[in-house]
Length: 317
Picture 1: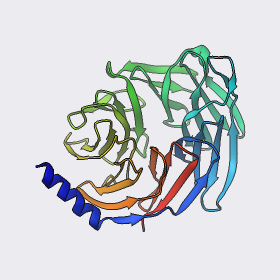
Picture 2: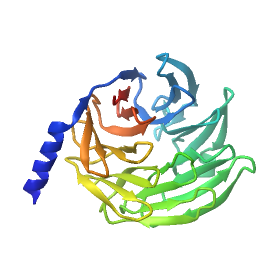
Picture 3: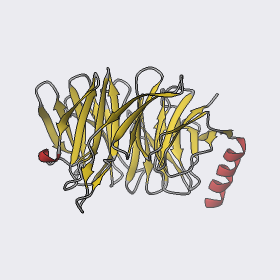
Picture 4: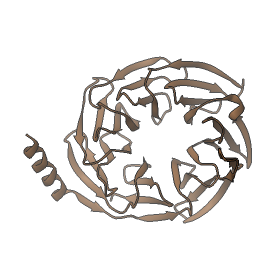
């Protein structure tokens, strides 16, 4: 059986189209996260206490948002690592390490003014944060709790435990009315962000920590420590997986959910599969370090980042 699987993978590789980078963006610092910004812009979170906004049409940086440096455990002043970024309707969201007790700092920049939402004084170990709309932010805690924070009322609307496993990552669909939460057990929780109501739970395809997750249409894709690139149909709760050669650190789905992008090998290539036929369509070659984020802008355009200073823009056609 294993022989047949390797033969099938080899045949897929023969017919896959190799894609080289369309554009390389040098940030000068290690990149931790990416998000789509306003038209023709990509939002880049770095380890240098700054978020960089890059216009990939004009090929220039249009905005740099700086946050304060922090103290490490030795008392030395160092740059803060911005681990999560988001953009919504003119507002930039930035999540970073406070340098104190494993707690997080959360800030919003709007009209060139940055305000604190949470600091180390709140004692929140937040791993992920995204806008739901103009007034609400969805939070993912290390303890695998989900919470909704209302900016207008300046309070947490709800906070609930999803499981006893450590939180890994969450993603929102395009409308931001569904979220999918991943954890170290391999279980996926799909919920409604504004209410916290759980829609469904998905399990069985990953048997270890899920590093990354995405949701488009009714499809959820997962990148796992068990070397499995998996996907589920939310409606049927059924899915499938592809066995990678290395830890699968990153994934992304095309807008209609039909194509899944996964980091499947130690060479940091990105493999794009048709999830319905399980056939390999593209192999993206050129990333130099371990991938940490893949984003589809549209059917033809992908951005990716790894543990170095280069963000790559890919064109599939």
